[in-house]
Image (cartoon, rainbow, N blue to C red; front, side):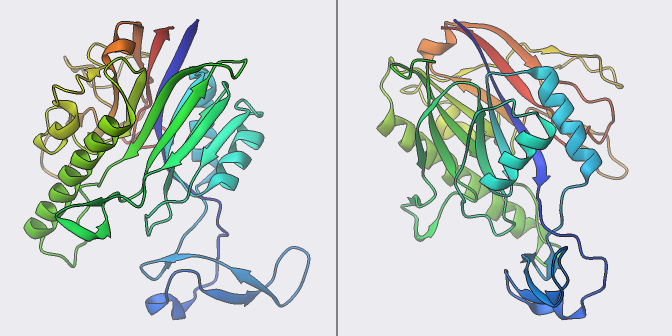
Length: 320
């Protein structure tokens, strides 16, 4: 049985209302403020919106949504782990309106992110258990949930639902973003420490939930390259023995810039400096599954900034 499994950061797939009028009162409001306004079917009705740092959370640009939908259709994967999704209703609507209900099994559990972005799963194969690890804390900071979003544990079943083919762990680790009001060095150190602790707790979850001969996949937006020390807790743990599924990927098309390293999904260009390319979106296979891998792919962007997302999706093909 051939199964394709991938990961794609959908870059703020929101479905919130867009407001065209200026609302000055948003400077200091909390998340989830209610305004009086007009809806399509009634006047002077109450509209519930969400805000982040005093700004309205807006719908993803329809043209960009259409672009990522076309990329997903072209890949035609059996199982796709996604990041930066607002909620399950948004993902279901996206699947119905832009993917023609390509994926009958969809799951999202709201996590911890104040920007309202969650991790989710889209699958052609039946889903068994769907487990959230969002309440996990690190022993060095027991008063705070360690995962910025969540680690979503998903059982993928065969068509008869009688057998678990593998378990998937979808991640979106702490980004490198530092608020301009924060000291840049202190902010970067704090982000790196969070990512390190997230990796440590991810390793503990994997050891608790799996066995040496288990079939499982750890994937998602790790927000660091493969060799980053902050990811070592799970990438380099000899007990886990995870294998990089994207060690030698094939690109769907050539990139604008000639690069010797094809294993990248994220491009960052700081003004006045050369562009940096890194494999932020990773797929790690358990030893048992790694022996069944037949292919690794990255859907390459056409624009330097990305096509519908600043991340390129990646996937592996397994013969199970």
